[in-house]
Image (cartoon, rainbow, N blue to C red; front, side, top):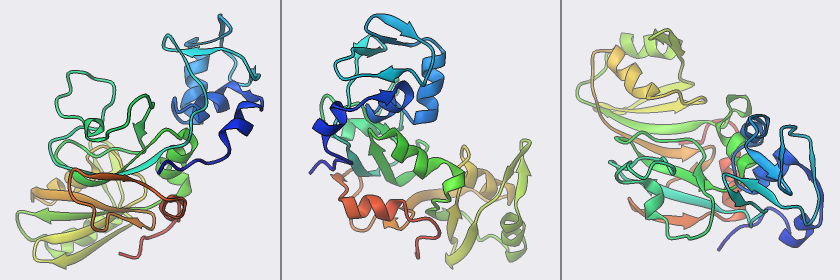
Length: 249
């Protein structure tokens, strides 16, 4: 089942500003689309346009990266990404790509947030740029929950230090919450996922990350989806993913 945010025919009969049109076409988030337009990478009816507020009318030919783009049905997918797969959809030399696990042709899809190659778990893939922005921008406070196993127990004093936030390579790393849930097993809840943030925090305690799995986004959980498998999200599940605050895990 492919979920649609609104009736496609109705949308095609409306006018939009260019950045909004590109976002609805699945190019990227609206903010990123505005940057793409300002960089002169988009044409309307053969003319390069650099103003994101330029109106797109029904029947206009909008071209990005050499191909026409149009508003497509909204697609929302949950993938249980295995270890060893990367989240890029652009590099043909990237080895094993998470997108290769999804059997959908002719759709411009991207991940709403990423998991590094050695991490696994819940990855949301979509062509809805505004939805992706809501999931990933820290101002929306859509918390992500991760289950982490380390090679040795982290002392309580070190856990408390992490909870207060640390500076690593000039960048502040600050979890929303850390829980100890078992022997060498921890639950990290983040708002803004900086690059390899949890691994860097673990390394700051002198321990190593053995496994790292994202188990929820907002109130949407990975549940029983097997590693390497994917499925479409229902409208109710899309709303769960946008439920701000802790997931209740």
